[in-house]
Image (cartoon, rainbow, N blue to C red; front, side, top):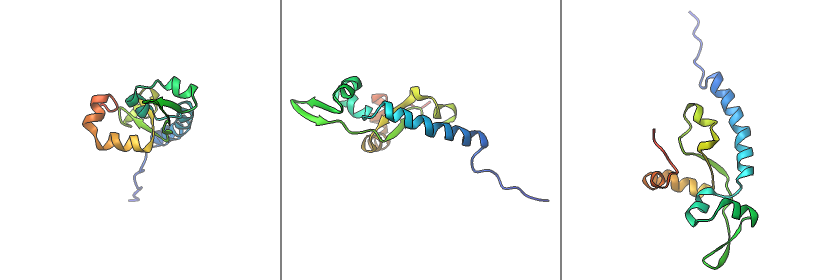
Length: 114
């Protein structure tokens, strides 16, 4: 009997990952600044975009952290991988904060468990 090794990733998931890579780049271009940082500071993303990432915070002009990663509010399960309604463009520092402080992230709406 010839044994065929199991695929590590299904053909469908491989295709979804390819689509995700493309959409991820487009999403990060559309949201160049960390959405978590902006939300925590009470600054609208449109204001940050209009001011090219330089905003007033407590009377001081500061640079908004750049987004470099996608955080999946609903995790990366199934169809949620490609559903950008549940994506946040975040800096690596904000992503670490979400992953290490899950109770805080859930309270802020940055993480959901279904």
